[in-house]
Length: 182
Image (tube, rainbow, N blue to C red; front, side, top):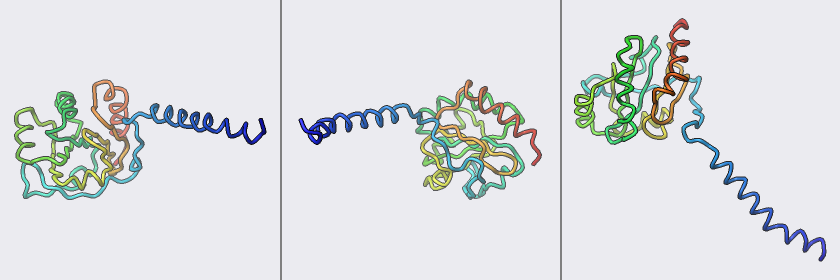
């Protein structure tokens, strides 16, 4: 067997090995840990109608000088319903400021849902067309962002925020940011 024939006979094995390596790498990625290019950058500028008072537009100014949890949710999102009780519990802490973005939802249904299930948000806006969520880099619902007092995004939680992720990651960050000057 010539050298060329030996190399040709190894070619399918090499291709197969490369495919296995790529597959292994792809399967080891976690969708909830996709890095956001917005971390340590200013929160996107927006102007959206208040869900309960649509004549009033809400902007970044509504959370200027505060540490804020911005939660992107929707009534049609089952995972959002899973984290809702935790958000309600956390909202009892007067030091936490919750800003909700209702994503691609019917505002009438969203208001009714919050009235029936409890409203953890100090402010909740309607992003009916989803454009603001695109600007925030939202992949899906729920997603939660932590914004510092200067309006910078410091953390992004993709998926359901549970008690464990809150205690281990979010709460320490909130405490750290709450002690920083505005």
